[in-house]
Length: 100
Image 1: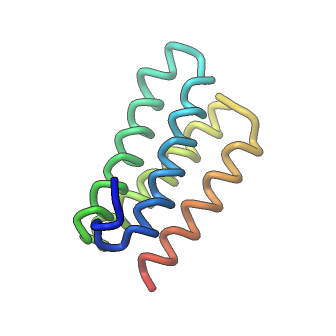
Image 2: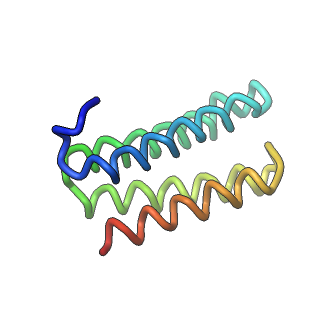
């Protein structure tokens, strides 16, 4: 990607968080990787795509969906709480930036 994307800085942040989501899902047990892991990756990908298209209201909705999926995965104890706390905090910051 290049800086011709509108709101490139927001896109970069969302992309970094997406990569962190993928790394997190990779440590889930295999049976969970294909259920909640898929939902988590789908919502995080959706947020990135909506930012790239400058559809911020929809991006915000996808971020909230991602946060919800993170809470479900945290409740299932699929990784250390610290991983979920960091990702949740960063997605909340991104949501605040989008809402302006």
